[in-house]
Length: 307
Ligand code: HEC
Ligand code: HEC
Ligand code: HEC
Ligand code: HEC
Ligand code: HEC
Ligand code: HEC
Ligand code: HEC
Ligand code: HEC
Ligand code: HEC
Ligand code: HEC
Image (cartoon, rainbow, N blue to C red; front, side):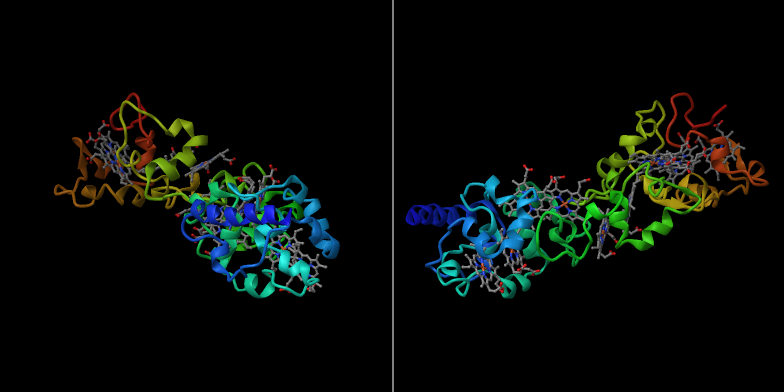
């Protein structure tokens, strides 16, 4: 029986090496040749506490969640083949503190993405990749090791879970003009996927996130504003909160003049644009978008004028 499992296990290790490109998890360690996979049942005899933890998690060993394409499941998916350890009454080889403790955040992510292969594809683009934070830090409720964060289950909502580390972000959501995240109307993950990042250089990616809710800004418009279409919403808006109305990056006309510099250099001192001398119009407190109101695009007016 043991031989059979060993065969499956050994084949599985080879097989697994082909699946997870970019270096497999187990390749990082010196695994003794005679160590075999024996399943998680034996472990629970001596490691009651840990086994009990897993019995109440999504990773319950009895569910037999195996590394895709292999039979390797349960405790041994992370601790390696356990036969030597068990045969020697807990003295023999196992991946324990020394090896696992030496893993950096990447190695710890690789431990999980043996199975969570879909996340493997995107993790390296996520906000926390390359930081000290790895999967287990946020998912302590599902795995029994490490964890820089207290698990989400200990907070009233997911926003508070994120804010336990991002304390400085909370201040932005207390600005006078803000997304109502602290009030519970939205969550951090409406915009931030914890497992993949947004390419902020790409209209279709970061902006799409905003446009899933703000559909009216998506267009297409008969008259597109080249200052919005193909630009980032963040050219003019702060994503969390701002002291300026409509979460603008700045309240004055500098917002528009960052691109419409031609006005500042108008040869006739009149700020003529489109046959319109703006100098007179700009007296007092007038703002560009008091007149050019449909900043994001218009179906009726080429200058986004709201007449
Ligand atoms: C998802 C990966 C993973 C799984 C599954 C896993 N462990 Fe662990 N385990 C670790 C890591 C990583 C450590 C190292 C602890 C650290 O560095 O904080 C560890 C530490 C341990 C330790 C030593 C510390 C302690 O808590 O006593 C034991 C014993 C242990 N695991 C047993 C088990 C058993 C038994 C199972 C199955 C019921 C299991 N582990 C499942 C990753 C895992
Ligand atoms: C016969 C009892 C016994 C069985 C069965 C057993 N262990 Fe252990 N294990 C021990 C003892 C004893 C230790 C050392 C004392 C300690 O740290 O708890 C230990 C330590 C460990 C450690 C920590 C090693 C370190 O670096 O300190 C891990 C991880 C571990 N066992 C995992 C497993 C896994 C996975 C299985 C099932 C494949 C298993 N054990 C089965 C008795 C056992
Ligand atoms: C042996 C394969 C395997 C390993 C290793 C593994 N997972 Fe999983 N995990 C799964 C499977 C399969 C599911 C889906 C279970 C289900 O159907 O509910 C799952 C579910 C989860 C869930 C979802 C729980 C829920 O409530 O929906 C989280 C979170 C998770 N795993 C995190 C991790 C983290 C973090 C690690 C590494 C520390 C890890 N997993 C390692 C196979 C694995
Ligand atoms: C910064 C915290 C954080 C990190 C780091 C993190 N996650 Fe998650 N994860 C979450 C949150 C929050 C959810 C809840 C889903 C949601 O609301 O989007 C989640 C959900 C999950 C789920 C449930 C199914 C799903 O896809 O939504 C799995 C599985 C999972 N994470 C695995 C992982 C793995 C594997 C890693 C490392 C590669 C990882 N997580 C890193 C916070 C994190
Ligand atoms: C255990 C602490 C911890 C938790 C929990 C946590 N983060 Fe982080 N986060 C960090 C650290 C550390 C960094 C990297 C250092 C930095 O830039 O602040 C980071 C970076 C980020 C960044 C990138 C910052 C930048 O400057 O580019 C974003 C975005 C982010 N986290 C969002 C989230 C979200 C959303 C959640 C909840 C799902 C979350 N974090 C949960 C610790 C945490
Ligand atoms: C409405 C969408 C949205 C929501 C909701 C949101 N964020 Fe962000 N966040 C962004 C965008 C967009 C950026 C800027 C990304 C860039 O410039 O690369 C950002 C940047 C960050 C940064 C990087 C540092 C900074 O301030 O620029 C952190 C950290 C962060 N967010 C954490 C959080 C946390 C924690 C929450 C929940 C409390 C949250 N965010 C909610 C959209 C959002
Ligand atoms: C990121 C750069 C950028 C910003 C910021 C910007 N614009 Fe534009 N805007 C353009 C470009 C490019 C055009 C295309 C017309 C051109 O070639 O000058 C344009 C065209 C216009 C037009 C004329 C449309 C036409 O068909 O000639 C108006 C009116 C206008 N913008 C108003 C504004 C206002 C008001 C603001 C501030 C809320 C603003 N713009 C901010 C880049 C910008
Ligand atoms: C060229 C600068 C600029 C860009 C780029 C821009 N906006 Fe705006 N946005 C504004 C200005 C100015 C206002 C305030 C208009 C007013 O008060 O009449 C505004 C207002 C808004 C409002 C509030 C509307 C209301 O009626 O209260 C939302 C929502 C919004 N923008 C979303 C977006 C989204 C989503 C994007 C990216 C697709 C985006 N904006 C890109 C300048 C811009
Ligand atoms: C999950 C839905 C959702 C997403 C995603 C979202 N918003 Fe919003 N946004 C809202 C709601 C709801 C409001 C109404 C204000 C409130 O929170 O009460 C709002 C308000 C605004 C306002 C007007 C604020 C004011 O002071 O009147 C602007 C500007 C805005 N969002 C820009 C953005 C930008 C830029 C993004 C992308 C970084 C974005 N939104 C992503 C839901 C969303
Ligand atoms: C009091 C109203 C008013 C204000 C304030 C105003 N404009 Fe205009 N703008 C006009 C009128 C009227 C025209 C002539 C074209 C038209 O009828 O729409 C015009 C034309 C333009 C054009 C040229 C359109 C074309 O046909 O080429 C641009 C670009 C422009 N304005 C940008 C701005 C910017 C940037 C600001 C802020 C610095 C601004 N405007 C402030 C009323 C205004």
